Structures are given as structure tokens and as C-alpha cells.
Image (tube, rainbow, N blue to C red):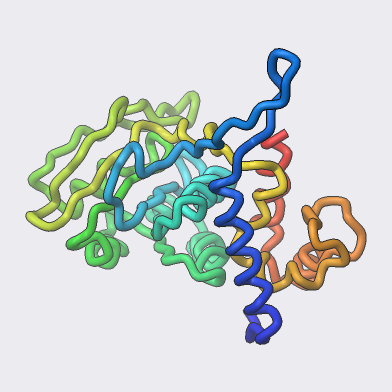
Length: 264
């Protein structure tokens, strides 16, 4: 990413201020023939796991296949709640082409996320991830079957967590976690395993807020013709131009479009 100008820095500050104001904003609804204000509530990860330092988002390259859209939704949750995210793409040992791992990881590293390609079998990146968890209270999120339990076992063998195989017919893992579980890796390190990833279905933000939570958009958004540009079908959209110029990865932009569509 290029150097951010002073004007762009001011614009980013404006976006972040507006984002913060929206969190506390009340919503107007029409009920029983009257207009009423109700308080807007966001489904905080912090309510599931209080006093968090960070969240470890785990996906896998294969079995089950990587789902960038899910990773991006979890990143939105992290951005909404100002939780530091760490991303782990697991099972590099099952990839036929190692370059595929580099390409996927680079998408997220280039926008400032701590991102790792890992393999429990080959002990790849396990120690690096473990170092980031030490002394922290970390939420753990990701699809079933991506290797979350295996990662924890590799970092703390004393846990001896049950690991389920991925179904060959559905290419999905069986859910080994049905409720919140807290694992102590050492006296100062805790990991809170969140049940499944259904929490991503409860992202309670407005359609026009999504643009604030894709961090690489911020340094270009001030160049859009319209201040309230959603970066979809609007003319003279700087975000779409940045995608065409390969300054923003098309995979992330596609995730954004799908996410906005899901918000109705």
C-alpha cells in the first residue's frame, strides 16, 4: 500500500469517528402506528468471551476448502469490536501447490493482518502462533474440521483434545465444540474456543456501515465522487478503481459485495 497523505489521514480519522458514533446510535422503528427509538445492540464476541486481548481466526486450505468469505466476516466482527485478529490458514501439508498458500496469506498480510500458513503435521508456524498467544486471552473461531483442536494440542499437548476427521462425502468436519470452552495453555495464557462460527450470522450493522470495516478501503474512499458511496454500482468509485488497478485484492472486494448483499 502506498504512503498515506495528510488529507487521507484526516479522512480516515473522520471515517473512524463516524463509525464510533454509529455504534451508539439509536434506530428509528415504526411500531403500533408510532415512531419509536430503540437502542441498537451489537452481538459482541466480548459478551461470549469477556476481557479478550485478541481473536485467532482459523481456516484451512483443503478438507474443508478455504472460505475467504467466512474469514472476512470474522474479520468484520473483530473490526467492529476493536479486537486484534490473528489469521491462520491451516493444513499446508495437504496442498499440491505451495504457491497457493503464499498467495492467500499475502492477501491478508498486505493489509496489515498477522497471517500464517500452518501445518500441525510439519510443525509449520506452530511456534510463531504460540508466541503470539502467550500471556494473552484469545478467542478461537473457525469452521469445524479446520484443525483448531489439533493446533491447540500442538501448542499444549497436555490438553489432549479430541480431534474429529473431516467427512469424505461432505468435506465438512463434525462439530467437536458445541459450547464455549476455556483452555489454559499455561498460567498466563488462555484460549476461549467459540462454538462453531454461527456468530457471523448475527453481524448487526447497517448496510452502509460495512465499508468502514474493510480496512484497506479507507485510504482510497475519500476519492469517491459521493461521500456516502457504498462502492457497488456508483460512478467514479475510487474503491472499484483501486480493485481494477490491483491496489485492492478482488477477492476481498468480492467478499465485501457479498457481505453488503447479505445485510439486505
